[in-house]
Amino acid sequence: MRTPLLCSHCKRQITGRYFKDYWGNSYHVEHLNKVPTCNYCGRLISRELTKGGTTYSDGRRICMLCHKSAVEDRVKGKLLLKTVHHKLENLGIEILPFRPEFYLIDRSRLKSLAGSSEKQGFARFQRETVNGIIRNFTMDIYILKGLPESSFITACAHELMHIWFYSRNLTDLSPQLEEGSCQFTAYLILKDMISPEASYRIHQLMEDKSPIYGKGFQKVFKMAESKGVKYWLNYVQNHKRIL
Image (tube, rainbow, N blue to C red):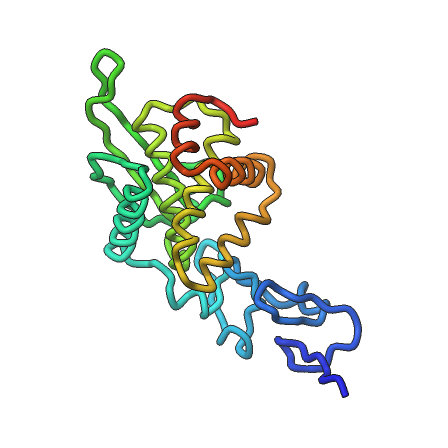
């Protein structure tokens, strides 16, 4: 006899249509419009499934499974940022000197900087040039406060790739090549993290269908997977767009 399918939220039997999330949890369809969803893992937030959750002052919802690794301390955030920087150096993505000013900010502040409340980070770069050659530069890196660690690392890798472009005066790339490359940089860091959360972030990158971030990532991923990371890094320094 087949074991009845139970709803992961209310524990009642499912007999009709239902929804199944990335994590294998099944829900009655009617819950989707009534129960809040975690912004960072896609699970329905409930005591039974995620040990509850909380809502940040800027409106973001996060379950307690994600909240336990949330980066809310500047010292922890800067340490993770430096760790990501070191890993990028090992991949040939060097940013020297690396003396960033680092800030954890809320969504309203990020929107005022980046022009969007959907982004998770923003990088600002200023350079000093002599005869067109960059002699020195400063960088400010802003990351959304309260991100789960895997999301925080994703945002750090993405913004550091923007800094890498700026530090090489690569400021006229097509949005698809630049943002796709930044997303691919995040992928390179995530794929070496052995955790379900990192795998979920990779799933999000792979499934993104947006014309700039998603399609850009897919094109860069295809290039780097077939020809290598060094080829991709050389490509972005010699081309303005990706076909």
